[in-house]
Image (cartoon, rainbow, N blue to C red; front, side, top):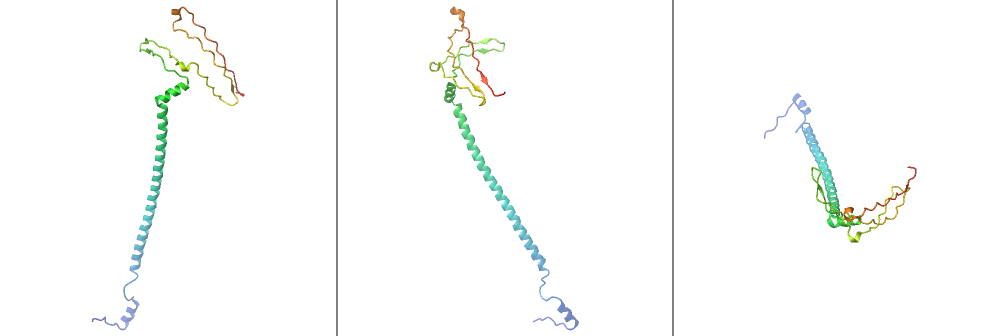
Length: 182
């Protein structure tokens, strides 16, 4: 039951000029500061989240690209392994008309020959392989390839031992080529 004493006169007039109740002016800057801090924090979180998502998308794209390139590398390695297999090498060598080598001879560091070299013998199925067509360098160039010359008779390694004279090499034919202005 304590009541405020009532003011009279000049004091009452001055009291009416002062605000009654809690002050609103002191609370407003604090509320604005809290709202600005919360808004700034939310905006910062949004920017951070979107940059993390962008990095995640880039990472997934790079992983996908790495997987595709790894699969392509494995496919190319399988092709290389297929071409390097002994069966494939032998088949390709047969297509090119190559034959297995004969006995090798070795050179010592002082220049002497060790071993007796042997000639490579052509298997019976490949006595006369079909001649391969030559590639044309440009469309204007014409190349005529003569038919393969007949096989020369085999000459033994040492003709003096058999009493025969070595046969003279067959004359070679030149291949005429025509080029357009070059």
